[in-house]
Image (cartoon, rainbow, N blue to C red; front, side, top):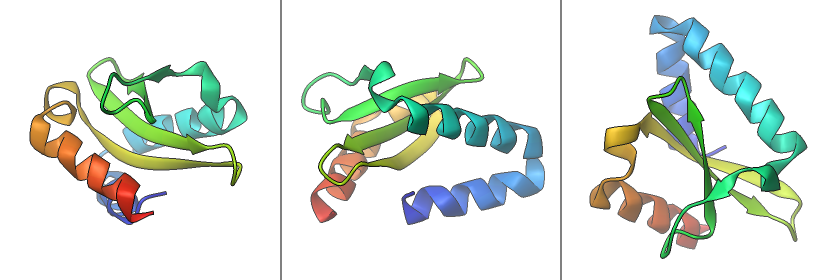
Length: 96
């Protein structure tokens, strides 16, 4: 899991424990079948997304060679698809 996302979840756990539990449950589901989820459009096609609580989105990528799923970002739907947020996600991909 991305360090920024992990920090976000830790902060959220103090205020909204139920939402964090929902996110963690969804993460378990994703790990079981990561290719079930929809890819983002170009130029973000290496990332997948899943909606949580209707208004929030969890972004992740699947590395089949390493057999791992990397969870990258979580935010409100209106915020996650902004150009700045997407640029940050792309930077994270290229750092790995």
